[in-house]
Image (cartoon, rainbow, N blue to C red):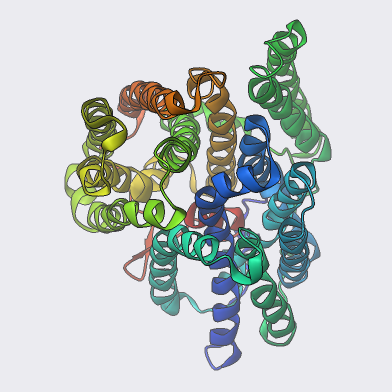
Length: 507
């Protein structure tokens, strides 16, 4: 998106009473997207049993959403600049609602995977408009209050998503088993469309950049060539074509860099602003965001599969087990931004990486000690430690990465940060077949299967802890005392012309 200050939408007079209704609508959409991501993980074992999905299809139910969301994130934001944020928001929420219905009505795993990919693509049109609509609707002096509300929504979504998914799956409403986790989006989405048409004010960027469709194609192709063979390779016996595809993805990414240089010289509207990578802290921050996404992609999927398929726990028991983790993340995130980072700077993020790694190691020790007899209360300690570590990272990381970026490029940088985080998550979900399923022997007697899942879980956590140590080292390239992007006393996105940063709030 354009990083020129001329693209800032003009804030209307504060007398526009509809702005609070518009806020409620877009916040509800952001909440729906966040819950939809977290609600699916807890229901995946039920989906696998009901649909007879293979392990690779299980991965694609989550990875397909993340990949489609990442591929369309920057493009969705730019389309809003060009054609109108209200218009793209309404298209996105309509498509998201239709895709949710298709997910809920899926007759087989293939239809569910395809519907999830469509859902992710529609979210990439809907979510980037949210903060941009806020900037276009609210005067500057009110935005601090608005972003505080967004923080509350994110915290609520993090806690309520897994619990809501567990309850809907456990209740088996109308004999639909897992399907209500998707169908619940229908009334919310329909209300959002009807109310959004009436109460959201249209806005556009007066001088929006052109779309870089070639860049979008190259990014998507490169990620598919990397993730598809990782996901399918184990089931197919790691064929030669898989290694060729993964090697070829590097060639595609190289072609992307070359084309973006050409695009910059030609008309100054590349998908990726390559000059940003000359800023050492930004380049390192992009690496941190990507690799941290990998950790998240691995952990949350294998954690759910371990509890439900390995230990045989119900979705509700699994969902309740995660509550201490969510509370710890929310509490640590608030403290890190308000108290710790202003005083200790980069050290807070590094402490978060080591704390999270320590939590994973404690988890491995407990799983090894208690085996399949482990209880939810015994998991509370490592989950709280992990949650504190994650909270110290996620809240201040974007500000730290953007700290040395020139203000005129802050919008483009924000969009890129959120995109690579989603791509990292998709890559982590692809790696689950290697670090988790690759350890599990499905041919053993049924009574041995829990021990296989236990071994796979320990192996995956070991890899995740090692990756967090790498993140700790990469963080040395971040500014010692990151500048905090604030407005009205609350954390605020650095530039409104790149609304795709909303993804950071939603995921």
